Image (tube, rainbow, N blue to C red; front, side):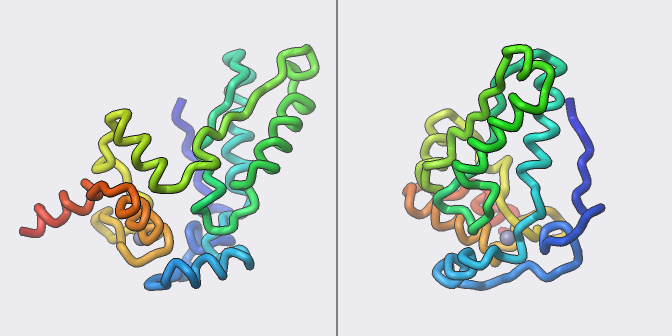
Amino acid sequence: VEIDLDLTTFGGSALTSGLEVPKDRDLASAAADALDIPITYVPARNTIFLSVALGWAEVVEAQEIVIGVNALDYSGYPDCRPEFIAAFERLASLATRAGVKGRPFRVHAPLIHLTKAEIISLGASLGLDYALTHSCYDPLPDGRPCERCDSCGLRAKGFADAGIADPLLQQDDAARR
Ligand SMILES: [Zn+2]
């Protein structure tokens, strides 16, 4: 299923409203800001995503739910932490007919303890074409990454640490030539 879930209806974040996405920060100041949850935090986003997944899982009688949150190189978002995943897993089994009828749900977050570099290496080893992905909080009008937001910065550092060139940026360089 594909669900159109437009969080700009709520707003409340630089990613879902007209608020300015911070640009050109060094990653150390971004990390310091993370102590004080940044403006790019989207209210209850992963709770909303997991709730939608849970509804679908119960309908198709699935018990395993997978989400790609990351607790290491994240930006201080409370809903990327292992304790959030564990709490949602408890909620999923309490809140559903399947759960109370003895079919509990498991929530898997296989990337949660990996660094960005480890995630990039893992994807590359599985043959993932990163040219089809981007990480940008505020893409340019043509869809290319801004290369100036915290998320672009973390992606660039992850590729650098993994010793892999980001094929998305190489593609852009080639297109500009
Ligand atoms: Zn960006």
